[in-house]
Length: 459
Ligand SMILES: Nc1ncnc2c1ncn2[C@@H]1O[C@H](COP(=O)(O)OP(=O)(O)OP(=O)(O)O)[C@@H](O)[C@H]1O
Image (tube, rainbow, N blue to C red; front, top):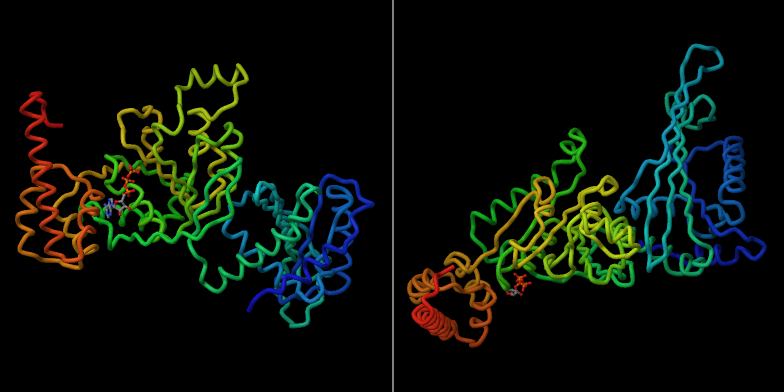
C-alpha cells in the first residue's frame, strides 16, 4: 500500500500561517495505542492540554492530525514511528506521577515520557518530540470491557524554523512517509550518504556488490571479522548493562588496493547498515561535525577514509590554542568527542571505521583502547586470497598454473587490486593466469634489481 501524501500536504498547506509570527512551527500527530479508544471527554481534555501546550511553547503554528483529510491519523503516526525508529532518540524527561483512585484502594501510575529525536533534512534541522502519557484506565470509558487495560496516549510534535515550512510540508513529510513505507515493505535499500555544506546529502542507493563471499582476504581473518560483527549486533543487552555506548570502532590499515573500501562495503552489505561517508576536509568546525554525527541514523556505519591525510589533526594542546584563538576547524579532540564523547551515546548500533595507509602517522589518541576496538591489517595478496579472486574474475577454483602462482606470491608483494587488473585483461582463464605469472615474474625481477643496486633491506 502506498501512502497518499497529497491530503497531508494540502491540509498543511491550506493552514494559514500569515497571522503567526513565531519562529517555530509545529505539527501534532496523535494516536491512541489501546485500540484507538479515547472517549470524547478524554479527547477534549487532551485537546485542551494540547492547545495549552501549543500556546505556551509552540504558540502560533499548530496542525492537528484530525485535519488531515483522507489520511488516517494512525497511519501517519505509525509512519512517523517507523521512520524515527531509524534515528537516535534521547529521553528528555520522564516523570512518574502516583495517585490513588477515588475509593483509595488502588494506586495508579501515570508516566509522562518525552523522547526527542533530532533529524536533519537537506540542511534543515527538525526536532521530533514524542509525548507519551499513560493514564489510569478507570478514567477512560472502555468499549471492550477490558478493565485492566492501561490506555496510552502518544503524540508527535514536530518543530522547525518557519522559513522551512514549504520544504518540510512538500518534501520532508512525504519523504518520511515514503521511507516508512519502504521499511514496512521490507525493501529498504542500503543507502550511502556523503556530507556537503555541513549536512548529509540526500541518500543514494548503495549498490556495491562486495560481500564476504567475494572479498579476497585471509579466511581466518574473515571469520574473525564476521564473528565480531555478529557479536556486536547481538550485544544490545551487554551495552545496556555495562553502560557503554552501543558502538564499535574499527581501524582498517594497509597499503593502497588491499581492500579496505571493499571490506567496508562487505560489512555494510552483511549488516544491512547505511553508510555515512564523512569527508572531514569539507566540515567547517567541531560544531558542524557534531551536527553531522547527530544526523546519522541508528544501525549505520560512519566511514572516515585516509584519516591521516584528509585533515591535519593536531594534538590536544594545539586544539585548545586554536579554539581559544577563535579559529574554527575540526580538531582532533572535536573528532574524538564526536565519535567517543558523551553525546555520541545518543545513537544505537553505530560502527565507526577509520582507514589509513599509514597507521604509524596516526596520533596515539586515536588508537587508544576503547576507541578503535579492532585494528585490521589488510595486506598483500596471499594464495588463499588469490584463489578467491580467481573465482570472482575467472570462475575457476583449480588450475594447473595455480602452483606456480602460489610460489611467486610467496616471493613478491602484490595487492588484490593489481591482481584484479591483470585477471580482467583477457577473456580466456588460462591466458589471464599466464599474464599474472608474467606480471609476478617482472615484479620479482624489479625487486631483485633494486635490492642488488641499493642493498635495500626488504620491508
Ligand atoms: N581484498 C580484496 N578482495 C576483493 N577485491 C579487492 C580486494 N582488494 C582490492 N580489491 C579490488 O581492488 C579495487 C580497489 O580496492 P579497494 O578500494 O577496496 O582498496 P583500498 O585498500 O581501499 O585502497 P585505498 O587505500 O587506495 O583506498 C576494488 O574495487 C576491488 O575490485
